[in-house]
Structures are given as C-alpha cells and as structure tokens.
Image (cartoon, rainbow over all chains, first blue to last red):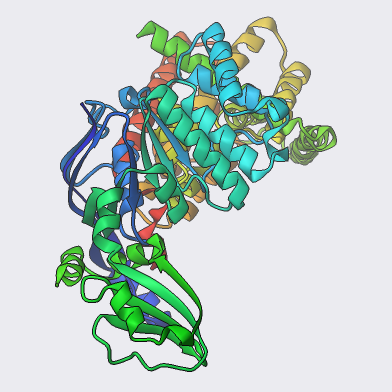
Length: 335
Length: 264
C-alpha cells in the first residue's frame, strides 16, 4: 500500500517586485508590482509504506514547499496529495495523528522543560492517556538511549541530544509516516552516525515510512533505498539508490603519483581533473575506455603510487542538480 | 465533540501552566515584573486624584468610577496577556513562518498559537485590578461581575488582536497597523466614555470596541442591567467567532518560512 500519493501537485507564491533604491521603494507604494514564482510544478510520485525515501534538491528547489503541503502546513494550488489516505489540505487534524515531523532548524520542544515533561505535553496534544504516554516514553527511552538526560531541561542538552528528543517527541503518538527535514544539520560526524542508526532502527522496528530531506549525502547514502531529486520545482530524478549508482558510477577517479609527468589530455574517455607536477587526477569514462586500457597509456615503471575510486555520490548529485536528468543519462549511456 | 473540547481545554491549561513555569524560571525577574507593573499602574491613581481635585465630574465619572474603570482595564489586559499573550504578536508569527509546528498538531491552530506564551507582568495587572476594586467599590456582587467582565473583556481584546493580527495574511508588513489598533484599544480604556462624542463614540462601539470591554461593564457594575449584560456577552461571542473566521480564512494564504516574499 502507498503511504504517500502525490498527483500533479503545484504551488505558486506571489512575490512583490521592487526597483532598486528609494525611488523604487516609493514607486512600489503607489504602483506595486508582483510576479509569480512557481515553487512546485506538477510533481507526482508515490511512497510505499515502510519505505525510506530521500527527497533532495538544492536550496529553493521546492522540497520544503512539497513537505509542507504533505503535512498540511501549506495549501496546494493545484493537484492533490494523500498521506495515509488522508488529504492534508482538507483534514489536517486527522492527518496529524498519522504523521510525525522533525524540522532540524525549528524546535518544537519547550526549552525550559525536561524531555520527560515535553513528552508528556506531546502525549496530551495527541490525546494519549497517562499510562499510554508513560509506557511509550519508557519504550522510546530505551530505543533512543535517553536515560542519561531525560530529566535535564532541554536548554541544557547538546544539539545531538536535543535532536534525539525532537525525534522521540514526534514519535510519541506512533505515527505511520515521519517527515524528517534536515535532521542531522549542525551535528558532528559521530552524533550524525548515531542519529542515522536510530532512524534505521525505528524504520525496522516500527515499520515507519520515512520521508527525508537532507543536504548531507551521508544521510541519503546510509539511510535511503530510493531517491527523488527536485530542481526548479520539478522532479528531475526518481530512482532507486542502486540504479542511481549503476547509471552514474560509470566514471572512475584515478589518482596517480608518477616518476615523470605524462600528458593524457587528448585521450578519448579521459579527463584530467588536476595536474600538479608529477601528481595527476584523472576521471575515466569506463563506457569509452577500460581502466586497464587507460593505465596501459602509462609505463608501469613510471607509476609510484595509484588510487582508484568511484565518483563521490555528492558529485553525482551536484551534476544532476546542474543538468537535466535526461541530458545526463544520454551522456553517460553513449558508448 | 465533548471529548474534543475537553482535550483542547486540557492542552490550553497545560500550555498556560508551562508558560507560567517558564516565566518563573528566574524568580527575581518574575517578581520584579509583577510588582513593577502594579507600581506602574498605581502611578496613574495620583494623576486622576489631582484631576478630580480640580473638577469633581469628568465625563459623568467620579474618582471611584474612574478607578473601577482602571481596574477593569488592567484586569482585562492582564487576563488577556496571561492566557493569550501570543495573540498580540500574531503578525510576527505569520510573517516569519512560525505557525508550522502548530499546524502539524491535532489541535486548534489558533488556540494553540495564542496560548503558547504568557506575560509575567500581566499577572501584576490582574492583581492590581482586583486591588482597585477592593479599595474603591467592593461588594460581593461587584466582585462576581468584575470577574465576569474581565473574562469577557479579555476575550474581546484577544479576538480583536487576532482579527487585526490576521491582516498580515493579506497585507505584508501590517504589523505596525495591528500594533497601533491594539494600542488604541488599550489607551481608550482608561478615559471616561462621557468625554467622547458622536463619531468617536460610535467608533468605540464598532471599529475599536472598547465600549464592550470596559464602558458597558462599568455601567453594569454601577447599575446592574441584565439586557446590557447579555449585550456584552453576545458581542463577545460574535467577535470571537469573527476572529476564528478571519484567522482560518487567512491561514489558507499562509506561506510559512520559505518566505519568498521576504526576499524582496
């Protein structure tokens, strides 16, 4: 069953346009001009129950607007969204019992209260009985390892501890779908890893559908099996992580430390990324040239050190951000 | 339906309790805020005492009447700001996209928003209001009427703040306008209505409905009139319904914090 169904969803914002300077300000008082910016354009996709989906894109791509339409914060202008069979624009309250939200940059917790009091408050918001909240807090306390600081005021917690509490607060009512907007923003690598492990555990144990937006490639790579990339309000890629890597990892990066410098700039299928003295960094398109053929161009005795790696996922995503998906696919498929 | 109302009330009371707990985090600041507000209000007693030495009747009011007017004014303002403080900063929440977390909760957005903060100094206003009533016009029936009217007055003040604050859904940078209108509501409460004539008097019962917040209640406290009492009650219900209507109509235009319009 689909947890989320989005059908041709669109949203436009009306923006005031002002000419520069004081003259422009005065003119805009008497003759205001507006222009429409379409933040989301005809987006359609489905998310299955229990799936972890990465919904990513550069700043201003329309991902936050989409997430806000799916959670009932914004009204769509056109199209329809259904989350657990509920239309967020029409039945916001009913939907909120089914979803949890964590906005990494917006705190929902009361800072002067302890996490325990906060969880009790959220339990009341979701009409849970006292004993239900207690049992749920106990359960989540174990899963998210909160024992150490559950009775410390939130304002005294570290960022990582706070995010853990934010996630727990959003899970108190056992939501079926969890929307995570930049959950690891500002966290150090160890805490990030910890949060990712907890999100995975939550998905595994509670079968929670997770809709994740993040600029952190690590989050996407380690958590998600499917990825949707949006840019300029449109979906430019909707594929499994496996396919993404299969299609795009046809290029290898070869770093060489040579005894004598070699010029490979004219070779087909080889792009020199960096060349400094006897150190060269090459990108080899394996659809045009095998790694072994490329290496044959250099005398084996001339090689002092070699390192062959895949293109980082971050680069692939950046490339997709920059170009249209079709153009990119065509390029990589060309023999 | 009844359970829903009960649950909503439970959340409101819990929210107010946590707000007050937050304000009490710093004991000294809390006590200073409360006591200085009472002192601040008391300063105006001297001003009115001096005026009444020069003239025994101002706009049909004597000193005791003006004092009860002040008590009502402080009580309504205090109660509104203890329970619904955020209603008075609604434009900021709308413009800066701070309604998001309330929109994903299964409770009334408006009630959750307006009860999400409190003003500690407003507690001083409520205490001051009751002190004034006790000193200048105390009786058991007056105490009951006073309590009823500061509750109704607080609801009117809050509903009015919600209506003018909701203009921000339609008019960009309307926070100054709503702030001015809220200030006018408060300022006009502290003068006898007898000094206002014609158009101004009409406005005080319509566009800036101070008349239903303090003038009518004062008249009822001085000379009880059931019909007038029901009139204030009906107006309160009417303006509260209007506040809900305006806010939820505006909410459809909410743009959250992506705030593309703010980058102008």
